[in-house]
Image 1 (tube, rainbow, N blue to C red):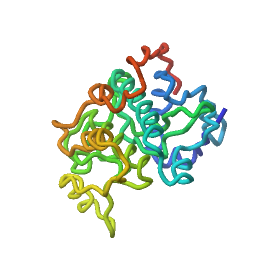
Image 2 (cartoon, rainbow, N blue to C red; image 1 turned 45 degrees about the vertical axis):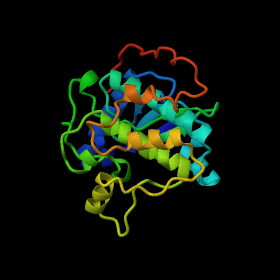
Image 3 (cartoon, rainbow, N blue to C red; image 1 turned 90 degrees about the vertical axis):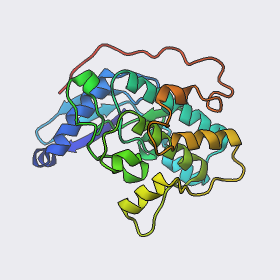
Length: 253
């Protein structure tokens, strides 16, 4: 197993930490999917909380991308498909992750994606409470433009973030970058579709799919079910994935 340790003193001083710990624990014990890391238990001592997670011996996907510089298209397709399957499962359960980034993608012993970190998730669908769908959160480089603009948003912000992850896998960089960093300049690049170049060896189908995920207008951006049905994504994957299994709810904190 893997253990995430949270200092109680810090949690007590920062209500944000306490809130996210509670939310992460509840969501991960209630949602089950092959591509979501399972929370096995939460333990408490005088000084710390311990989140006991399933072990992901393949490590962080970021390390793999760093070592290889970028992933081959067939590798990226596998990982993006698994990520989309996990997110589709979340959306059907009423959960919007809101912090999908390479750092939150681990690999198991079979080189399959395991999504982690639900501390920022909007979860009204299963917990009965949530932050409003206008809260600015997550990592700016992966955040959808409507989120950066503090507009009302919905589950499609996760679809945008999947697009950023796909670009990062295929290029080893991010699709929108500004120097010096400025949220306003980053947002403008996004809405102008001023994306960094694609590798010339990428297939047209991959580029078209990526552009659809990174559509700045959420009304024109596919939802997660539409993304999952994309032809490029399903090359060499005959038929749809088997039904996902959700285990009975277990509240833990």
